[in-house]
Length: 479
Image (cartoon, rainbow, N blue to C red):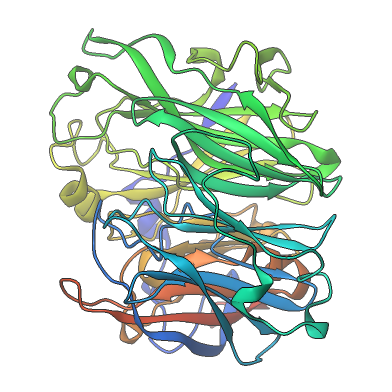
């Protein structure tokens, strides 16, 4: 049974101004875990800059991964002012960044055409998927062993094979949102969407250290769904908040649906996203199950289709619910998601999703509790942004929300994630909006690396940077 716990205005009154006001240069006095800025380094003084779909191509928070760590080295990628893709690495904790420029140039000014990185532990390769939005992917991979023994090899473009439009001959067709994930057996999987917004399917491919193969579609675009206004929609797509392996090798997926028929909205200025759903797989994405354990769909067979019994948090499409936000899994294997939308206390009908979200949207923490129910709590720090928030666990299961503009909000496991505290907010960093984070470095070192690009105007290039934070220090409310 869904147990919804939404903190309203009265809850905000319980949080003192000191608890939600961060020092401009570091953590303010709070109750939850804190962060300490260790360093802030520049990758490129003039990275490609243009705004489309309210975002930048070098920093869309649904990139997976935009920055990651393996065997003591960190890797990231971006487009330069001349539109080339750069893949860079540094030896941790603070080595100089080494850069390798790959040959293709970004084909269109579309912020969806991000660069995503993945590592295949079985053969030590770095994989790069880029410049794709409903088109064949641009894909390259490094030589074997490059990331498993990085100190023994110089970093250069010659370490990468040719850029292809397939996965080593496996044709995916037109795709969007390539995301890499590593299985417990150290295989590399690629999640991607085929079709378009409102009429698309999620698919998986898998690399065993030698060859790629398609596993097939696992979500369905078809089926009838009726909105509260009585209007029905017959096609949609599932937008993932993430694909995350957790305890016991379970693969978790939280998501929202987007309908193709804008008639489901109270106003055409909104988003047709609705509901937060959840499925999981215990066989590496071959079959998918509802929260109850019942079969929900099979990959390459009968895919997961829209259904009310997949919903763990219901919400109609009139609240500007964001798609592709973020999820994480705690050490006990429980899935957690951060979602954001405009609560009904402000309006029951979003008429301009960008403006209304910036004015009114709130972030919510949605998670599965040990008794099998789902809880939702409003985070009492307003994002003040259109864009997405990233969710990260430290090694003690404390939670960190990295909001747009690199504002960091935390809650402790000891409080059952109720002592939300704004611990970092530095406007002088001039962050554009959404940011990316290195989940792997948090797990191995307790350090959070945040990839961000500075705000510019028009198409004037701007710096892209990485800020490193030490996590986990506790701060107590002053007496």
